[in-house]
Length: 455
Image (cartoon, rainbow, N blue to C red; front, top):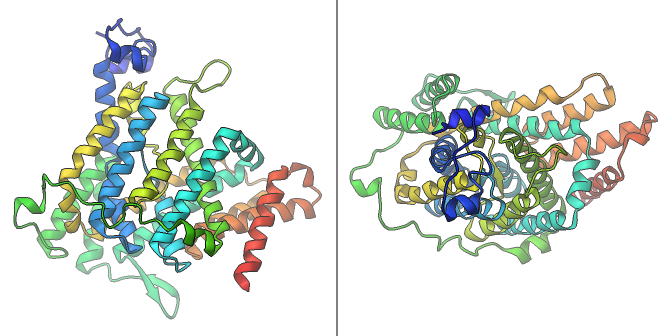
């Protein structure tokens, strides 16, 4: 039998398999096996399951009840991952996006002062917009119209923003009247536990241990219990419950009318733009790694995958979570030989099983999840290698995009300064021909929002 490793390296074709499962997912056609796909799905789940615990804690900062946020995170992930498996036949699991959840909690709710219900309404609308952009082909126009340097800058800026939130949640960075921010008391229990968790997670990742982030959360949580940073379970029911967590507090709680009345064009636009580029870039990279790109560069069912994500985002808002994204962690499952939707289906089923562990969310402290935010932010810095620093009219907009996301505590503000400065500098230096017409529309929209916000 051909092993997953042989499939990845293309050394031998997979044996012909019989059955509807093979036919539906095109397993043999894609040179894989059922066993390889299932193992790949388990690997994918292990590497991205940390989101089950990280996302609810971020959403709880916005006021969403933790247990409902955890249930919403899992249900949204299960729904969209299975949709990705059955509709697009992609070996890609989907979950609430890191960066999008931070934007939701810290920019829209805490920064703009919106209720989390209104913010969910904005997420739902962004899902509709993303879906329409996909089926009409406008999505491709936007992608083609925005320069690559800004696309890369968005990823780097979001990474710094997420890392900054992680340092803040860990107590490593604290507010200061004298210097705005300062180093916290890193010898106190909370920050010290977080630092140990950070070192542990980095070590496990460096050793390429599967599920390193999840393992780090578990070990750091246990350490936090031992030293008294957080309480500990006193009964089995505190850890495992056969009663599924309730969505009653968040299901259909989104306020779409409130979102429209607030006039949050820039917020919806920012949700859509970040979701569009992050998801599209990730999907293209993953499908290339999986060998699903034909000789003409076409990716079969890419539109279906983007449609699945946009529908999933609407469903996510309906149950009480944020916009969804394909995760780069899917690369681990693909490296194990995952080539079809059966990989995603396996991961989706495992996400669903995690519902029985919902009670444990009450015992996971910020000290355990903060290191994950820091490391995810660090990993997003890889996009900086795609940025050319030869053209000063590129460097300044890139710098403003990256630096202003954490400094203004807003992804939207970083986007606005980046897009507007890029357009203005190109025009002033006689390089207007480099601008796609979509850049004028986006920049004008941001300028109008600045003016409206100042009134």
